[in-house]
Amino acid sequence: TAGGNGVDGLAASEQEALVKNASQSTTGNVYGVYDMAGGLWERVAAYINNGNDNLRLNGKAILEDGDPQSSNKYKTVYAYDKADDTNEANYNLNKAVKGDAMFETSSGVGKKSWFGDDSSFMFGNAVFLHRGGTTINDPGVGIFSFSNTPGMSGNPLGFRCALIVK
Image 1 (tube, rainbow, N blue to C red):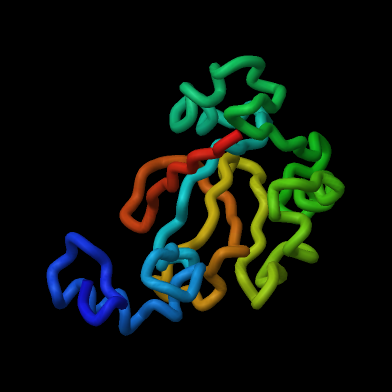
Image 2 (image 1 turned 120 degrees about the horizontal axis):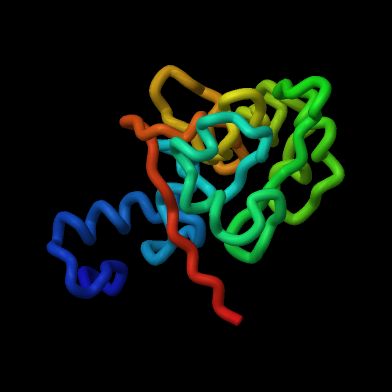
């Protein structure tokens, strides 16, 4: 390693960049995660099942994984307000749900997540959830940002894999 601060297997310029920017990682050293503050919208396995066509068009596999009306260990199905299927009504209907870091870190819809991050719940044809946010013309993105999407593909979209060790 370069001066004891680098990472084995990387070129000198890559090592220098990691060492220089280590304070930006989640651990404060070169071994942390550097992209926690957004950069693209990351899809998560969550939706409202309000019967909108986008559920089948853009999420057939997740919809058919078990009961489409119920959460399981691979997906979360949130309730929706049958009388008022709006962003705010659905947020309010679900705000007692804990454990997903949405309602613990936000106080409503708008830029009401911690640190002014976006907070927008699923409704209407935007039945799927994504997190993070793109930095294109939006200062309200970050690790506490969440929003709705119809589920189709697009440029600033991606996903994050997670490994849970038991």
